[in-house]
Length: 626
Image 1: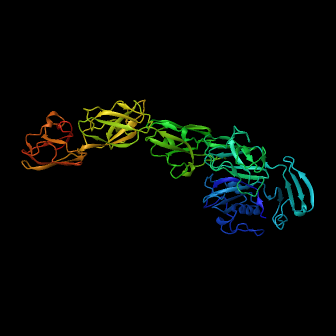
Image 2 (image 1 turned 90 degrees about the horizontal axis):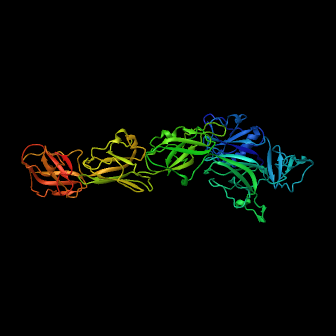
Image 3 (image 1 turned 60 degrees about the vertical axis):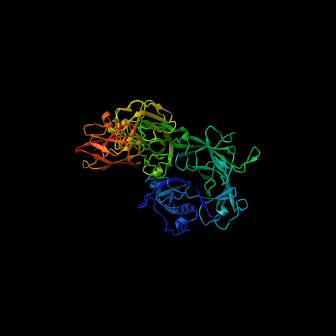
């Protein structure tokens, strides 16, 4: 029967693959004993145990497995395995492409093997107990037992079976030792190691809130763990077991209770299956789950776009080296791209750099400004390991804990149209309900090439007609999902942008109007660039106007150059202009073009082309060209 070794995990650590700190021992068999490192490492059955045997054969205290099976070790590995820092990329206890799963022998040079519920300890390979004796400890004959010894602390019984070169061990009690204290971090694999007597594969370990006592009626397993409860990780050791709870994301970091269940034990006249929380009656100690609190969506931080807010995060064992990123709600923390804060943050340096205030239980990033409504995740990167060595937050997978959700309630960008001319228009800012709009909201309507939040965003575009209402004050209508300004008029075809400010303390400078909320496309004739028509006098020509949204009811007026459009006199065409169409409406039209046929100008000169979107007169709109 193959001996097993008692060793403990020291965690996952980065390795310099080009010049490893822990060298590979593959292909370097010893001159004595078995060669445990045969075949391709990645296909080696029970690769960790084989590496442990090879390391023990060489007298190493610490060994490592990487690249899914490659065995490494040296006499001074214990001094150098932490040199490159910790990692979270190890898999199945067999490291990663650039990472070591590192182990240390619990008791140097000792091997143990289960025989029923009695344990046999031996010293070296090749002696009785490892070959030729396959019976269980209950039936295997002793050979020249010479004495008994009782452990002064655990009261276990030791038998010196000298003829078989064995020490036989009978445990005084079965189960885990009390008083364990384990440490895990939100976002990192949580492994709890238990010591005890006769720890068997069918038993299970659970994590519970500290308010419960093990076996208490009504107790519930702690939520937020990858798995809870769990069975042991496969191992030949029965005095030490590792239990993998997966990656925790508990809502509140803290101390929790470890409770153990012995499968098949009798509890209140019932055989325990370890499926009921109340079967976990053995108190094995406590586990500290450190790191940042992982708050649920029901505890989201609600903010307004364009308004500075403080981003607070709470937890345990936090450090100055911790970092956060803000990503779209559709991204999972730790996935590709989560190291990069979204461009929806107006001032990303306020998020990505070191916190402004904090200690081990709280951190605060001040004056963060979002420029777009929506839902976002705050992803946290742990910046310090258990040995107070810095962990670099330079990889997406390092931002693997969702600290909280941010809900930004305000305008939602959309495209709108407004009709050019004397007709008063409404402009509505829309948001998801409730959008937290109010009387303190202000807008600026600017040319489309002006960026919201820039210096020029504080001035209205000259497209707005001052004969209408300039929307410089509060909105005329307010609902839970919109604010509306009325009485607007526009006179040109230039595309527009609406910049919103929700800061009730004051909207003055261009930087205050930082939220891009509406893109406006004017409906009507093209004014930019203006129409330019060159004709011979006393010659018939076709007058063509380009634009959008025409209905066929539009009218134009050719007036003398000294007559201004939008005045009373611009409704009457120059006496030098004649046309076969007495109504003034277009002879032909599409939504994008108006045409007047057989127009004649009797005298040389410059004439102004004025436009009307209605059927009354041409005095109420725009100068189109010459």
